Image 1 (cartoon, rainbow, N blue to C red):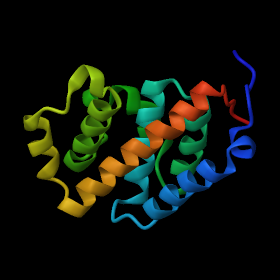
Image 2 (image 1 turned 90 degrees about the horizontal axis):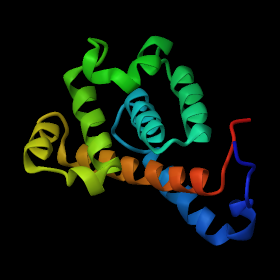
Image 3 (image 1 turned 135 degrees about the vertical axis):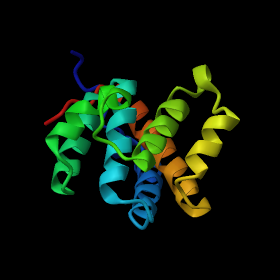
Image 4 (image 1 turned 180 degrees about the vertical axis):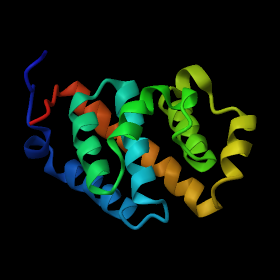
Length: 146
């Protein structure tokens, strides 16, 4: 386990403020809050960001998500706990988080688009991009859950 490297919020407040602005804008998303948190948790699991997994698991519980579904996220494809819409969002999350390996194929995009309006799909993609950016800050600067 590494110790935190720098306090990036303090040394780069202008860019941190911009990231917070994006996060604030996502607070007005049409996506269900629990779905948004599941996306954040799953991307954070894939990226190995312990800080974000801890933070967003707690946020998901506060939003009414169940512990059982949170625990099942690493094996979401193998469980009956998620709706078709949630499965599409989780597949899109994994694909974009691992974009260098998966390249966002057309067939997956079409499947995801069946479950989300254009605005929701854009917001889902922004949510995935944003949590991946936060994960890179968390992993890169060795943030630890409190």
